Amino acid sequence: MAVVAVTGATGFVGRYIVRELLARGHDVRLLARDPAHLPFPASAVTVVPGTLTDTTAIARLVAGADAVIHLVGIIAETGDATFQAVHVVGARTVARAAREAGVRRLVHMSAVGARHDTDATAYHRSKAAGEDEVRQAGISHVILRPAVIVGRESVPISLLARLHGLLPAIPVFGAADYPMQPVWIGDVAAAFAVAALGAGADGAYEIGGPDRIIYAEFVRAIGRAAGHPRPLVRVPLGLARFAAGAFDVLPPGIAPITSQQLQMLVEGSATPDNAIERVFGVTPLGFAAALERSMQGDAGRGTGDESVPPPVPRPPSPVP
Image (cartoon, rainbow, N blue to C red; front, side):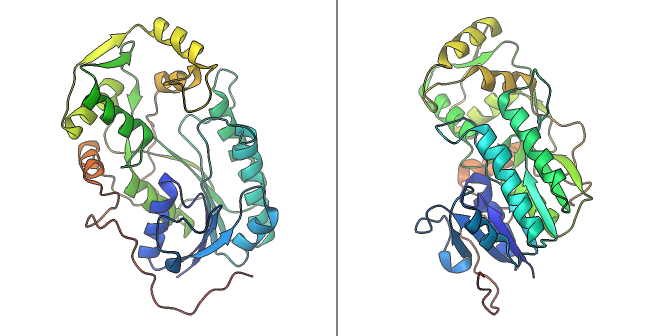
């Protein structure tokens, strides 16, 4: 049994990592902006109110923890929530606090495609800079870079499922042959839990599912799983880039796709060195089975019970 502190615990990925940790019998301590609204029973976890910018809250979160899992991230910038502030400064704050608290292991969430190249998107460059902050903190760490994650709350999957129900045909860009390696959310949660407790040497690891597919297959499979398969209509890539550039001026959350999101899609998200089973011992679920579970509302690795299991009875672990 270990004490694991988690940032981003109430997000899509975080809630399933919390569920996995509790199922393994660990004490979970989490940072929450709004402790009154949690996606699991508050009695199952220890809650530290606060945000990434609250250094006092971060210090309370990590004090006495055996491991820290840092998940906070954004896909689009809004106001003060910039890539630099969230992915870089946020990672620096958590990593330094973990080092000062004597935490044994930090597990940091990045993304396939993270790099410093000048032709990379601002998102990917900020993810790479966040990884650097973790490496430079002088603490044992594992950086996990998941491919596209499959789960009920996945924004691209839920959007495509709705489009299959609404449109007579689904637009795709160019040849739609961009490589993907979708990974089931339950398997991602398991890899993070295993990494937090010591698996993997210090460094970065890419994790994906067992199936390498192209984007067109991804879209078709979602239509079949949703029960409303539609034909695909190919939009010339040049036209898509022009439209995405025009959408860039719209407020975040309004644009159907931005130029940077289109670039990340075209680059693909498959990994040539999938560490999920080799390093972390997680046998990943196939894409079709993962989609079926997603559409049925099961985001776990076992029976399909969506509830968070109660913690194993043990003495309370008060936050300093």
